[in-house]
Length: 451
Ligand code: SF4
Image (cartoon, rainbow, N blue to C red; front, side, top):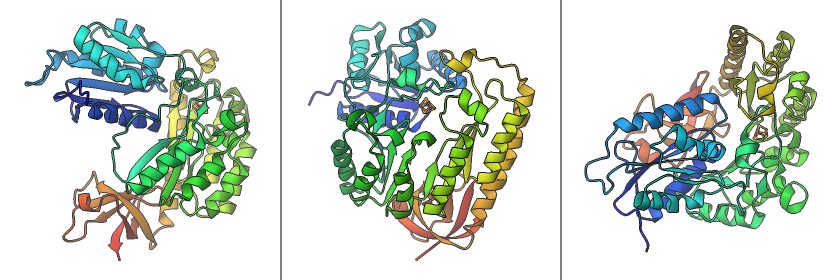
């Protein structure tokens, strides 16, 4: 076996979305297959790879800060390399390409979102020839699924079904850095899922920028409902997906929440705003009435469904009325979880040139008001599970107390419970245990494991 990275250690630092996390698992799989050893810290790493995200401005600043500070961290003793090799990939790599090596001269490798498979060659060239090795492609010729994967957890797998996006929401950089939507053939997805199930994977999360339009490019019309059905038939215990665009969520998929055995009763449905004027400026192509209708159909199909969403506060030109429309929507729907963001301008997107003169303090106050509503509902929703016995997929020990296990309920709530006598959280990780809930807080549930 060709093992160019034998005796070398590597570390992957990941920012951003699940797609990036999955790409990082692919990178780890490739480098491990070529002899590399994955380590957790920068200090131990001969090769350091940043998988970046440019959805928010803070991510750029964080990346520059982290890469710049590497100059002060010497390569580990015993390293076969005289200097640490640093690579940047993901969305910032795709967007900035060569420019990055001008801003960060000690960077060795830059790669984009379409050429993950080239990374080993680029790293090898940087080690053997030095200089800057940059390769960014405009589009990928095929779906990068044949790459090996080193999964973070043996019981859970992310399974990309589409890459790219055709929607061009005016605030979003993704279509420019991930390219147009490309679906993966149904048969390939099913084969990969069957392999995971045979290997003991309990939970599969289907990934795509907009999973609901899956198949449109391949089959002429979306086939997401068929994918869900086919994956349910693989026997996987838990099936989830992200992300869902409201304009493409079909009645067929909604009905599956009430009928497919493995489909978990939790849906992340980004609303972004409750104001029709702002939704139009965002180019979201649905109205708040349509969104409300989807929620009502979802609750008819699956009364216990846990809904989560993304909301942007302070989109250019947002008025107090626009904000109140959003606050009303959030209050009315009563989500289990809301990811709230203050609008962050991304150069190169249409929204970046929209007039934006609302003072930051006003936006911050709106944001704080919204967070109060969100937290009140999250608390209220979790109260409904007090006294219930819930199947929890154990992930390991809780970050706040090593004597507690932490896991996920079907509704994707974090659940804590004391570790039973004679067991460790590591032994239970990947198993599904029943937990009777006796405590419900805003961000988690807690209880005791029962037979
Ligand atoms: S659907 Fe909109 S927000 Fe989501 S990735 Fe595509 S352009 Fe971005």
